[in-house]
Length: 290
Image 1 (tube, rainbow, N blue to C red):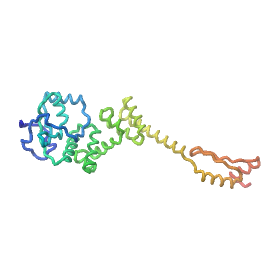
Image 2: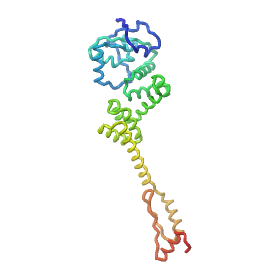
Image 3: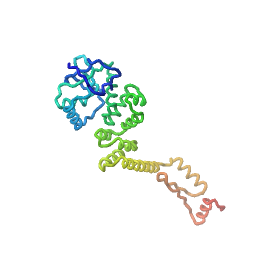
Image 4: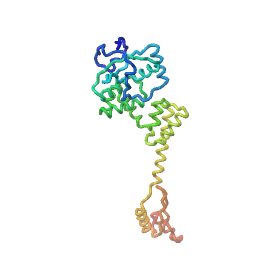
């Protein structure tokens, strides 16, 4: 093992105290095992190649963070992009710093927090990281925000993205949609079909966030109006109550009465048997003395 010095800024990200020089060294890349708790799921090939070229030219400025394993290998906590980029250009060794941890829980927590603090996760990966911290460690949103150095509103807004259907989450991860577009589409969260329609229009027409907000506001209003119409059409008077109403009118007018319904609308038909009978009915309905 070759001791490494002058490792650059950022080492204190995962350490609250100074570490002994013995914990910094150059490690065989084949001995570094990827972190199974890695929150990052999407690695942009172009950006990975850019990082690889940067490493080829300038080297790795900040070491990878690892933990020792019993079989002589090292588990990766932070630096998977640097590790992948290093392998792309054929590096055999990379600088690492060793961290001692208590178990898988702490490994997961460190991996999540480290990645979020570096701000290189896409919004969906970041949201999933927050969700894991909350579920696995019973953190509140406020505690989660404090752990990763973010505002609570940031954590809340990211978590809301997980309410989107998978196909829109994928669009965000692949940068086909921005987080602003996603928040606008979330206005239609009670209607997946409408969200799909909005998403298709945004992608096809290249709509801005502001245009998307106007689109989804209009669609939400249309959906509300359509639901109101459907509800009104589905309104019907129960047969027993309908017959009660008919009997009341019949007893009052002494004529045959029919009630015809069409949703919340309808008509009341009253039969008359002569012109004199019609005049009598009109007088009764108008409240005039017969």
